[in-house]
Length: 138
Image (cartoon, rainbow, N blue to C red):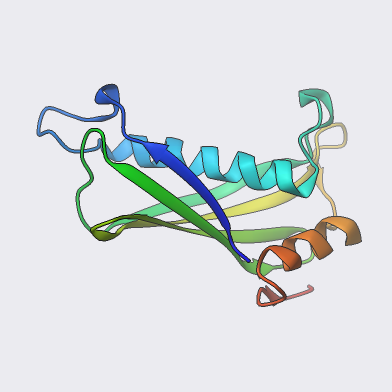
């Protein structure tokens, strides 16, 4: 089971060339990540937020346009000791539009240190992919 999130491209997300602006894809990826965090049960108050974003990338395959519906399929591609990697495939009825990746680190803001992923979070991450995530404990 992967996680799906749908967005409809709004006019303000397009540029002068009529296609989705590059920065808008990162907003879509953030929305998809937040929905995965909700599923993980980690949507706590901002005072208890357990993650930081260490890296994010997006490869653009083809253009997307105003009013198009985009499906963002999120899978967990790697689980480490203190971090995990999400892969996001953004598609429309025309096929793959873009592919994003994000490295998310379990973090204690009080101590300003990374922390090992809790077993409960690790189990939920694995369940998102029905056990297909590569687990790399370091």
